[in-house]
Image (cartoon, rainbow, N blue to C red; front, side, top):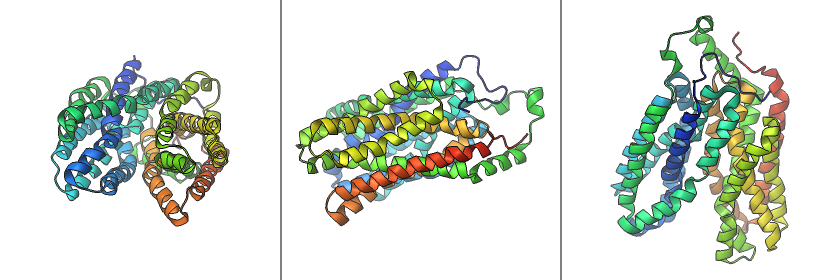
Length: 417
């Protein structure tokens, strides 16, 4: 079943304004908390004299904290609603970015980035998907695709914007400007457009007959123990591990194959537009197919592309196809991760379950590039790295197949009835 059902009373009269508001906040949140660091590394390195590894290490720490916070914040989304959690996340992001602009010590730098990791878990895609799923029911897939199409513009907008501010004002003032966007744009949009927790309105007759908190908690526990849940977690984490490692090392991989640095950068830059292209494909052609079929297709694209890249050498045509397929695969997977949770487990505990599934995905995003570097150091070239990533990407496909085959046991849980 790939129709996202919704508990009674959850559908708002006009849910699309929520998507438009979140589309703006996701561009800003991704741009300021995730993409801006790429521009800030060099000026921070130059002023403070820290190594690049030290600076990037702090950002990797933030991703680990985002993973650790995903599950508890998902529970908060279920209990309190998106308005409270995402608004607080935007306020906290603004405060921490201001503090980051004043940092002088490595210890403070790492501590602030750990806090920013927690705010990422409060304002990026996972909580936004939970808000949309709670409000849209059967339209959630279309709404999530629309949101990710907008979110795909974050790097396109914020890389040049951040660079322009850094050039004009310096990196410290640039962080203050980025903080102001979270405070003055994201926080108000979250407060005024996102629905409050449904628990604050009068209960309907149907809801008064629903099981109490203890039974709901028990149902959530049963979901987290199913084989389908764990196989899905392995599939999503393995896919992200392979993709994140590839994306970080791609430019150097291309240079190792004989491409100049300029050509390598140009080829790697194709990934961003191809992610958007993949999402457009999901929105148009993909909507004709079940969510499971689209997710399997996206997962299968990555190992196919990696195998092709292994044998591509310096052939321009094959490398362009490889990069295009990888970008499209990840663009579709961003949507698939958002819709498969409700497709298999229902929307009753979407925030918590999606948070639990997101935790290993976010951790893999941080660890993938590191493991790739270690393997490269051990073997001295990227051949071993590519075959490792191919094997991990194939593991994702196999695990997803097992998840789907065992999902019939879940019976769209509400395990409570």
